[in-house]
Amino acid sequence: MNDPAATDGCPMHSKTLSVDRRTGLILLVGVCSVGFFIADVATPTYFKEPFPAMLAMGVVTAQLTVICVWGTLVRGTFWIRLPWTLLLLVISWCGFAWGITIEKGSPNTASMLGAAMLWMFGFVTSFVPLKIAAMCFRWQIVHHSENNQTAARNFNYAIRDIMIGTLLLAMTMGIGRVMLPSDEISFTRALHASSLNEPELLFAITLYGIISLLVKLPCIWISLGEKAEKIRSRIGFWCIYCLFLAVVEIGLLVAVLGSPGSDFEEIFGGIIISHQLMGAIMLGVCCTLRGLGYRLERSVSRQAEPESAATIAAPRPESA
Image (cartoon, rainbow, N blue to C red):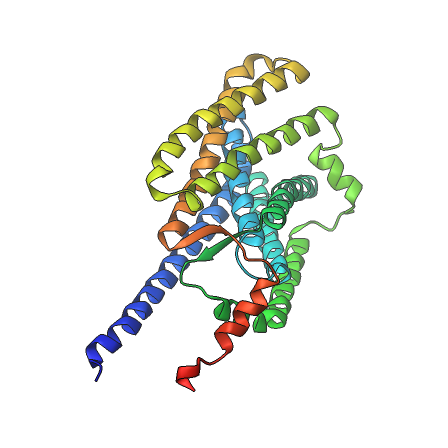
């Protein structure tokens, strides 16, 4: 006869781990949400000087990447998370628009529209490459205790989650529209306000986005895909790699756009620290996820998933 204490020990331990993981995940989401929203509201006040502006760009870029990582790499159905991902993007812009209103003393349509265009540009340049990587290499962020039966059960909530996410997205976009003054709003005006129609600024922002992507992707792999004993050494190599990329970016900017003049040290020093800060935020968030039991793994093929689910669902002969 089995010992009840031994029989009951494993479920209690598993339940405790589950509660601890859920609590840790809620704390991580809460800290990220509050911290990033405060950063969004405060960001407009930092754009008066080049160096603080570059640091603010690093924080905002890291925020958009965290949103995109959740929207593309976390296990589950992409279409369920898409409205929630866009919801986070709109909330981020609302915080920035609120910061513009506080900084200028009144709503400013041009600044808000320009920020919306830049937000969307930064989101797309992070989201699309991560989605391509997820599709081509089948990358997924999964918890080691998850199984196919749990994953299959989560799909039952697809329609409900899509409807709730879409409703909240519509409400948030409505709030964002109310924040804008009743002036003319158009894509052309937003493009002009963002200055993305100017070739020099478009080149600078695009180059910054490309270098940022090359900086952030290794952070995700080091934190969630690398072996634990190699993380410290990989972070050391990453710091040198990040510095090298920043120097390459500075060289290309000078070669194409010329020297910025008296702001040389502030701008280029800001670029170097910006990428380091961005990577540090990504490493911190992803290492915390690793501490909660999450890993970056290759997903099984779609043909194998139904077979695995059927195997789990089928009763064992000895239990019949």
